[in-house]
Image 1 (cartoon, rainbow, N blue to C red):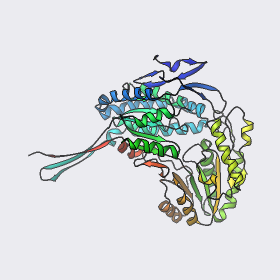
Image 2 (cartoon, one colour):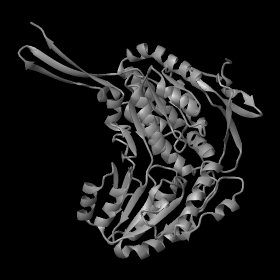
Image 3 (cartoon, helix red, strand yellow):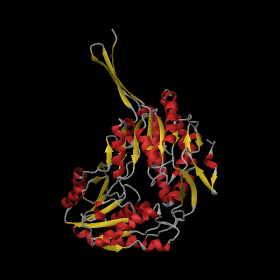
Length: 493
């Protein structure tokens, strides 16, 4: 295998292999996939689609690095994260631009996601405090008891295309801060952001093999799920794949946190601040081109708020400026690929055929931007909960409005849905807000907040079919996921 092929060229474009044992290497597989700017179609790179042999090499490197890294004091491990945070801050604009180039979201959206990513590195750098255990003397006569947290071994993360820097840093900093070693499998659609992350991390002097990267698709994923030396797996993606990852990895005795898809309901009460609600819902539904698991999907308009809310949302949707995310005037970028745009278009067609009223049609934007994968903001009204566009995750810039008579009906509607990632209510009533928080069977809840995204020091993850596992991402849940709590009972006579 050649050294440092990251800088190599294939048909004039950069070729990206894998990062194993501290260096970039070529893939043992021969398959390559194009990485293109979804706004322009520009070829950015070729990425290797690694297979089982590449995973074997990465896991072997992580396993070999584990004993020395596990014995490294938490304070010393934290210093790498402090330095990593400094480097991330220095390269903040480069990171954001890379995300926009390969994903398409606006620069402001990319900057926001990079900031959230850095928050997790900062949080994980507090690991000496987060890892502290418990002790109690005299639990019996001359008997003392203590509980300590210890790392477990090699962990892996399988990450999605929509947040190529933020999501890997939901997992990686905590895993290595706790003393584990790590294999990252980024989305093959957006590998350049992960490559930049790893290059910066290596600048901190991190020992070779502590963090490794395997680029690839299904074969690489299955190899990680099956590998005997991988102790746990984190995943973010659609619910069907999350369930598959959970079952396959759990059957092999691994710890699993699999964050799945969403159909997020936003309830708007008649007493809500209409302007605030309409602004927040517009950003929630159409920000990131709707490609996020916290995007608002269905607005449940309660009673007489329906007519003015419908008008306010339609006005905002019609005026959103669609274009290249690098253009500061752009308010919404493209979706990730032509294939994904076709999928979203099929949902729009399904909504029209089912009888929903198409208030704002985003399909003409595709013709106005022939070089990219663009859609405009799309808004449906009169959406019945049984319609396909109300049931299934679209993962694009499509928002549905359903009128319901009261808060009871709104809560019943969202409780009936099999997914439960995030939900929000807009109201000026504390009574309504408390009732909603109490009865909604959803794990991330916003009150007058359009995107209920927990900060790094709180857990992130959904409920019902939106999450498979027991321990969620970041917050103190991350420390629990990446460590074993060992209890020692001792008597000295």
